[in-house]
Length: 137
Image 1 (tube, rainbow, N blue to C red):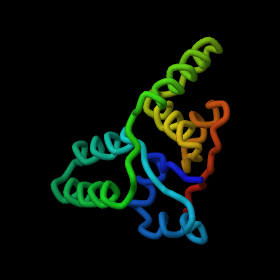
Image 2 (image 1 turned 135 degrees about the vertical axis):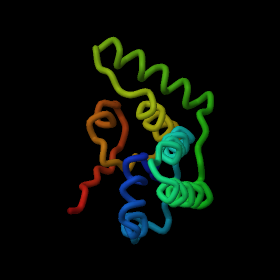
Image 3 (image 1 turned 120 degrees about the horizontal axis):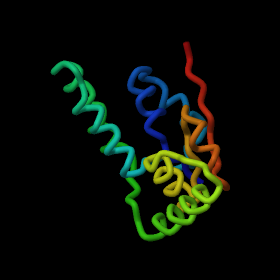
């Protein structure tokens, strides 16, 4: 089994350097990865940085994440899951941000769970295993 890290997890991990290693503790056999949309969201954060110093720091962090974790692309199998979930949720009048739906669909297509602080969207995806995280003060 594996885990897809949601953007919320990686942003928090940037703030708390031990976050990822603490999460992965005693889980050596598992695969940890990210969706390609998470890469886009992280890079968006780089471009939105309000100072050069912050931009450089974020950029270094994002490049390290890209280097460390497998990145799962939006493949046809994921698109099939995505479109079915999107249609089902729309029929029920439930809206989820398209990025979160892509991340959730990626995890489902791989049989992975999602580690996230953002339960609100992910808990609406039927069949998705969520690893809820709680922000430390």
